[in-house]
Image (tube, rainbow, N blue to C red; front, side, top):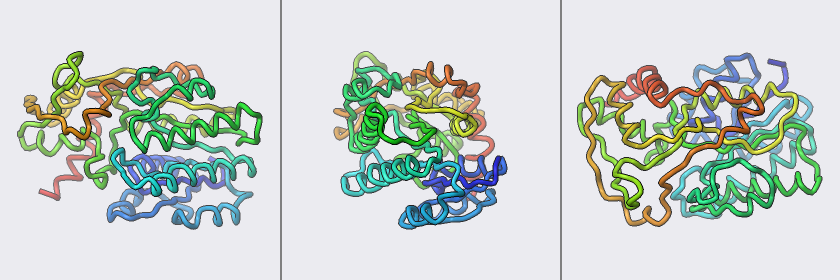
Length: 332
């Protein structure tokens, strides 16, 4: 790595902390930016040698003061709850700050990598192809305000590029699918299903899954593209090493797996036989529930950015045995 600075926003979050620690371990001078509003956030970064730590309200001033030293901005900070009702908060955190950083990067000439989301695909009726043309993006219909906020940014950036307006020399929007990851304990109901299942499975208790409201899918047969955060870190590292990059990229394994598969993988990791109970899906979710997501990874592979994605079973086993078993042991 060079002696230039890498700014990582959302560095106290679950994806951001893993990426910040990975980059720091590789020798980068990482500047961590976050609100650090939950008690565990600083603990997620204890392994990292950080160059500096700032809060979001300091970001633009800090960037102007250090503009010549910045190699890249990796913007992962966001209001990430898919049930967040405060639209002003979502716009401020997910739209306005992202576009401010996009415009700074375009003016300053540094690389810009930001987190979009598979939530932009909505119900999946338009497919899951990371086509960043304005016409293709216009066809997507997100199901919640979080997905909409990410979609607003994707469309604005695509329009800037198509119109020939100034853009960063290297940029990428990452459409993360269902990431499971160390450092997600603070996310409450937004934790991955792996994290939610583990305590019950480890105790030998049944895990609970939603019944299906769609006859095409059995109970527990709802499908998602579950991707391990270590693979996400490899994607970001590969992008930073690229001399040229521009576009939206799906970050998923390209293989949908069922929630029942996840449950079986968690039970296998703790050495117990699977036991699953099915419960009714809440009314509030039924009209905006995604039954199927699967990343089209052809673009990621074509650009040489795809790692050898871990299987669900191998990723869950690594997560359970290298992290969850230690994280939760002291809570019981």
